[in-house]
Image 1 (cartoon, helix red, strand yellow):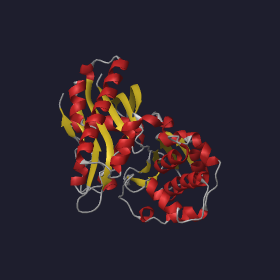
Image 2 (cartoon, one colour):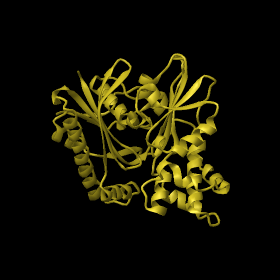
Image 3 (cartoon, helix red, strand yellow):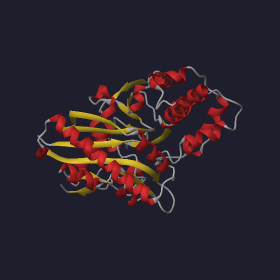
Amino acid sequence: MDTWIGLMSGTSMDGIDAVLVSFKDKTVCIHETLSTPYPEDLRHRLALASQNQATPDEVGELDTLTGTLFADAAEKLIRNSGTERASIQAIGSHGQTLRHQPSGLGRFSLQVGNPSIIAEKTGVTTVGDFRSRDMAAGGQGAPLVPAFHQHFFGSDTEDRCILNLGGIANITWIPSDHGSPVTGFDTGPANALMDAWCHEQTGRAYDEGGQWAQEGIVNQALLSDMLSDAYFERLPPKSTGKEKFNLQWVKTLVHRHDEIRPEDVQRTLLQLSVITAVRQMPQSPSMAVYACGGGTRNRFLIKELSQALSPIRVLNTDELGLDPQWVEPTAFAWLARQTMERKPGNLAEVTGAIGPRILGAIYPA
């Protein structure tokens, strides 16, 4: 049986998710999973680099350090699974995004996590640098998971919206009418701002279950200020990241208002994530929303999303056969397969590229 490995670290910069999977038709079989947290010092350095507070030497060093950690995660995954290395066709590694600048003259998306190190240490062909080719073809280079969502989560009877709640939220709209286009884009922040504010104010990496946010109330003046950001009104294709939505963005807006309790800021940030996702989401009478990503563990966030979308159902991708935590790393395993089979990995109507493109660079074993 051919197997594939997917490696992913998102905008939350909390660590590496790794999966060993196989694909058959439109089903996914997960054989092994692994989550590896970043050391706190590395996480801090990555956060600084993402805000342009790193020298070229430091960025190069981070590329090597994260590449080594990605390789170690893949190695441990292989050992734990007992899988024959020869059966693993390739590793798809997204890497760790430091900067994503999809507009302007010098458009680029920069990930660290050197794929050469992964291929060298594991002895398995590795595919990386998935975003560059789409951007060279005029696209945003993101989001890339909608092609995977369409392939595995599409339905003939139900319009489906896949809502990924990572550091940044993105949606994939998959109409049941296969003649209608799939659409997808980043709606704005999901966990990134809540995590950053929680860490700043409490020292905790995140607000477990949304419990701290529940202690606060929405500050409507602050929320209105946040919602006035031009990104939320921009038409797709569009993508964003911590370059835009970061702790400094929150602090700048909070300082414009009279003193606000920290828990009220947290509650307002959660409401921002809910409203910006719901307002930009296509809707139809036959639709259902399926959530994935780390935000699905924030029970209060899911409760507020469900209330905002009622009577539309909000479910998890568990209902479609794939655990919410493993959707994104599985998507990059699939994108690696697309690359190795010389098949496109992007959806041009999502990214804005001039056409479908084979994505990624191959680093042979």
